[in-house]
Image: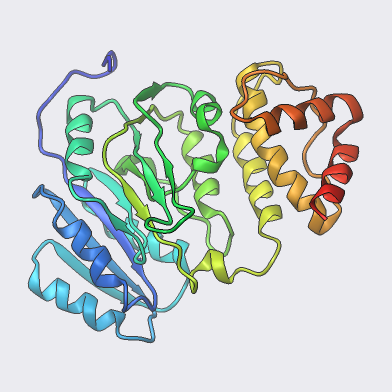
Length: 314
């Protein structure tokens, strides 16, 4: 990876790991231990108890009393975004990352990431692999590979808008000087990326390390019975509104097709169309289903495509 923005240096860089906590007493030790044993010293772990009513707070206090690099705060319940913002305000590291308290890290995840950031200090965001639902039949690995993106649209087009998770990335602390997670919003990760993209960050991806996302039956995603796909589409539309897009570019078409998927499912629930009609390329998609959707959008239009796929789903 070429560095043509800043000179290389070998300064030690502190990483602040922010872990919001809410009623996860059965999973919290697994999470904190996976971060604590990462194998490099210059790390602080911030445990933010967001008004838990179970024994999570007691466990977190024990960790803070035992390990000098683990800090603990208790606050009134304000939701995931509020807890993350609380942690950001108190983080002292040069870099920030997030771990949800029902998830964990694979061993030796952070060391190669920090080494890369030390070697290339011009990087603003570093993204690494995520294993979703580990150990289950439908476990899925997202591996972004090794790439450097100096343009946010290139990054979005590479794998689509669905990898805008907050947790499988390390960020320069300075990106959050005037940025916070939006409270009370669904898909707050995507909305955060919209704010970060305004700063024109340089983004890199790496195939080392692994964030382990465990599906939690009592988590936000599982207990959200509202129209989640409409919220996803709203967040995606807000994200792309921050980009200077030439709609004739093929890379934009790949982003559009990701939003089309959310639009199709949203239409089944609401009967509303939020996405603009777009003539799209028929080439360069990851699956034949996207190519088929593109053909329908081009020939019969967006609204009729939504109706057609709605009938097919039923």
